Amino acid sequence: PRRMRNLCLAYLMAAPEFVDVQRCRTQLQTAVTMEDARSALGHLVDLGEQVRVDALADAYQRWRGSSQKLDHWFAAQAASEADDCVELVRALTSRPDFSFDSATRVKAVFDTFTSNNGALHRKDGEGYRV
Image: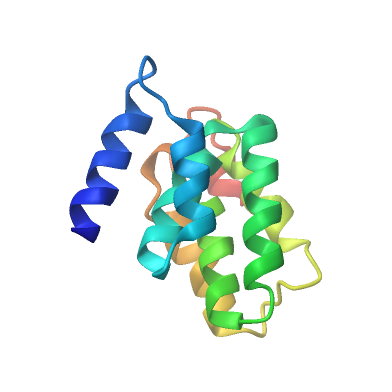
């Protein structure tokens, strides 16, 4: 059921005429598993603007006490399909809770970002300069 729920959410969020921000927010706020929370957060991050800001703030407040959960927060931004993903990654690396000394945090950001073909291979070449 969980996999189907997240697949249906992905379809809803991919079709502009069906985007259901409230359903996505509800899933993020009531998620019992990290898989459900990550799925919802990823879709909200992709939307950008205030929707992204609110979702990231909500998730950060709830997850900041767990390094592993916070790694998912970082990864959701590095995986974003939004046009400003490169800028998101640059901003992440200047946060006080990011450190190149933390292998898992570096992996959460850069392994995820290098798998994000749209952002990494951006036409202006900025993805390679991160």
